[in-house]
Image (cartoon, rainbow over all chains, first blue to last red; front, side):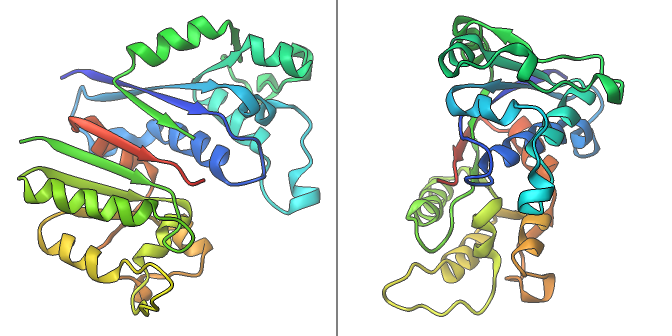
Length: 136
Length: 119
């Protein structure tokens, strides 16, 4: 019995397509994968936000009001609530001029996890050490 | 022999990624490998029955039925399918319906995973 690790690399911007939403929802589904596995088997996901993908993390999205769909912000919050590690590329945040206080958190939902803003080198290490890479 | 799991998110029409997925799966299974295919997003259109093969458009019904006969497991995201108006009575027999954890569970036991994005 052992764990396998998956890096969910989200690079697509929000709402232009459903790609980034599917990245989050697939990662979050690790919560119930044990139903289809044997005791002791686990899938350990890490979400890596890169490039335009970081735009998915902007807080106070108004997707329901404007598009009639659940915001990707809520998916990000749910990810934190279920203890997903969500790594955010610092260089890309700097490149877009986005400060940390403009990013979502799920504190009001009771999440212990927070977004982890890290240099790209840290994300590279995660991708290199993961069993599988899933690009969204 | 190995286990290959392919996750495909591309539409049947408007992209050749799904055609590639089916051909790759067929080649792999013919070499004796076990193959799983997960369909999500626009790729769930593949699961619709009674596809008409117009020459200008790709069709996946016959190839996917051949793969099912060879033991390939094909599963589509139920929510993604329903959102596109595809219900179980409309589905190709033999295709499984499940949620995203099916894909992760197949990944767990796979030797290789090929994740083909939707754009």
